[in-house]
Length: 251
Image (cartoon, rainbow, N blue to C red; front, top):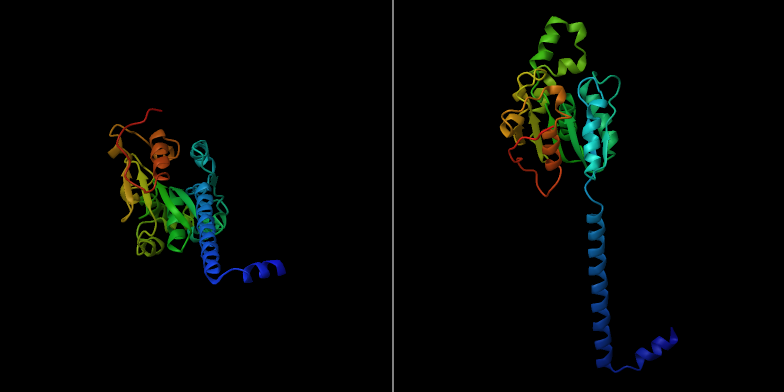
């Protein structure tokens, strides 16, 4: 270090100022390049994983084909395992979703009652980037209400919570939509009655028949229908979530 000090002391005052200015410029350039490199690395990381939340009963198989389609499109996709048989307290099911997300940003697809679970999770501060729900009884289904009256012993906790006007759904409805959200449903739905229970204020609401009037899609077919798959892939890509273009898709 002595030779550096001797060199510095041997410089004129004017030369010292010039060297100091050049050194400051080099340091600033290094900082800028470092920030740009960090930003590029973040962009290169790509979109977040997609978590798929099963419906009432917790069947993961119903979502396997949609998960495969997402993987084929280059997305990491995982189907969440719900506790028990997926008919227990929906609030407990949100904890399974929270554990799967592990605090990281994720895109979420909620099928049927899985969409209600997703809404409860988002309302509680879940780390969702975007949400798509498929045939979700966000305001309940009359099937659950009938089950609670006609066969109460066959209507477990989740069934009771999915009855229109339940305390859980009323509470959830007080919270505004906090993330980009698309709700997709079919007018042929005989499980979620009325099908428009899937409509959510503040979301991009999409009836399949508004895109393809001739579409006949049952509730159980939503996760595997080609039109639904096309809409889902579009909703989870791009810079913003927008209403999909109309048009039918052949099987």
